[in-house]
Image (cartoon, rainbow, N blue to C red; front, side):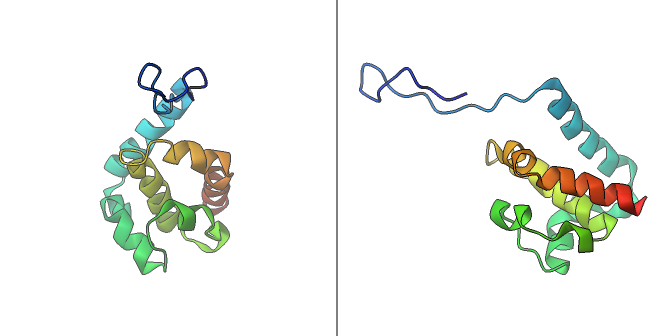
Length: 114
């Protein structure tokens, strides 16, 4: 949501944008955490190290431009975890990852690997 009503003056300060996710996206976030918890063998608590081991530096610009179709399942899942965790410090990170199509590519890659 973006404030289009206020002009930034002291009387009418602009309110910072807020991302409000749908129930589906909130469930998706929960599912990423649940999967990581139930599949300790994937070591997704090490998601940043996994990304670095695969030549990726954490950061949303790099994450959205990765060639997903050359990554193994662990790395794709680590990428998804990076995005979910990034939301805590960068509101809208998940939104941007979905909007760019990168999340769909991750899911398609995982589907190919199963």
